[in-house]
Each structure stands twice: as structure tokens, then as C-alpha cells.
Amino acid sequence: MSRIGYKVIELPKDVTVTKDGDQVTVKGPKGELTRTFDPAITLKEENGVISFDRPNDNYKALHGTMRANLNNMVIGVTEGYKKQLQLVGVGYRTQLQGKKLVLNVGLSHTVEFEAPKGISIEVPSNTEITISGISKQKVGQFAAEIRAIRPPEPYKGKGIRYVDEIVRRKEGKTGK
Image (cartoon, rainbow, N blue to C red; front, side):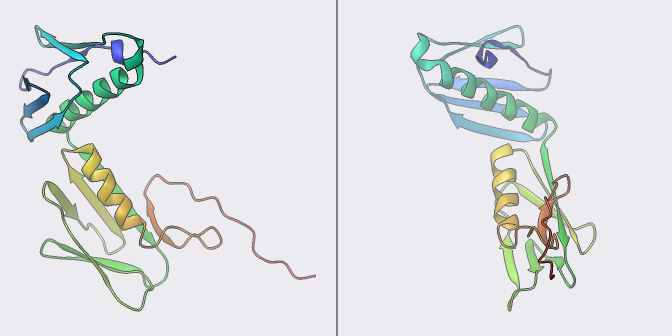
């Protein structure tokens, strides 16, 4: 049984958490995040330490989820989040044109992505993409949308993959 909801969150000195009804706002050096939380779970802040409490066992899953979401917000406004993608395949390239990411991944056309608000894109080389931002959900969602254009295939390993992703390779056809 998970007990994540009972763990406390220690706030860094430069981070403030304010609660207005069911809206919780976290402000830090990198920016500000706001999220709606369930009013049944109570949030208590004392001396830079935040704890959560639930009314009964019907809110067990929500208890841990809310604690994890707030912890992700605190980490986001202090350190930020980053996802790195890699293009593997002959002729697979990417480039940045202003705020637009242009992908050439073996399709009959180029694929263009506009960076959402709060997300920054870097292209260190023509086969690498770095996505960073303060919201873990937005960074992960945008990286997943890019990867979905051409996920890695199991025979040659071609496609768009995360840098730390392991692609299980299959053996091809063997003739007798």
C-alpha cells in the first residue's frame, strides 16, 4: 500500500504556496504554476513544510495524487523539467525556425510543431531535440506528441525516441 500522501513537502526558501479555495498557486524563481485541487483533501503549511490530510479512506488515491502533483509543481518552479529526444534513421533531421520545430522524418512532407506557452525547444544538433519547461505535464505531453509522429520501430530501430529509451529489437525474417 502506498503511503505517499503522508510524506511532507519541504519548501525551498524562495518558493511560496498560496491556497485560494480549491486553487493552489506555487511561485518560485522560474515562474508560477496554478492547479485546482479537491477541497476534501486539506493542505496544511507550517514553517515551510506542507502536509496533506484526508477525511476518510475513500480519498486514499486522491490523497497521494494531490501530494505528488504539488511536489511536481514545487520542483518545476525551482529546477524545471527537461526531456531529450533523439532522431534515429537515415535522412532524419530537425531544425528550429523561430519558435517552430520542423521535422523531416521520412514522410512525404515535413512536420511542424509550434512550441506551447511555457515550453522552450532547443536543437543542439540536427538529430537531437531538448524540451524544457516548469510544468512536468506540459513538457511530457509535448515530447510524447513529437515522438508519436514516428515512434521507434523494432526491426531497425528507426524513429524518434527518448535519449534514455531502450528499444527492444526483433529479429528479421530468416530464409532457409
